[in-house]
Image (tube, rainbow, N blue to C red; front, top):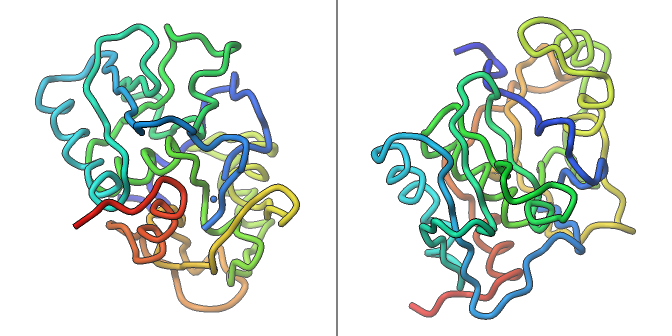
Length: 225
């Protein structure tokens, strides 16, 4: 696997709020407010095995907090998952997935890779969480020019705006709620040494951290033992 992974990608151009890409960072206006907290998941393709794995891999979020992911065929399901191998892994943030300008006929999440770490990360986005390295207090010093050069080239071919929005831009406390920066968060990107001005490479996290658990419980309530 290349590092960062070749599947490292960004939501499609119709993303509705260009600043709404991240939460250890929460965008207040994109968090779900429903009771009971049930998010319906409609699958737009994929095999039965892939679909079952997605629901299984997403479970740690609902094990920690008072929320459920429910398989659904409803046209207006809150989370709509496609499996297009050409589109990489991405998700809209929280309630952006049901914004009137997107349309329920379009996927709100794409999974080119169906593995535990990828599903946890993308479902974290679907819950309103964002990239940990964009936390206002993130203890990461990035080599911005190297990242721009790498990410605007093959195989990623991102625009400069995508690089800034998904990697380089830090969030201000005026628009986000936070808990302390958590380098172990499933929402953190892995960074090779070449992308850092100093320090060791940051590996890919593969499970929810204690910070992730606290964060989702703060948002949606702690599930009773």
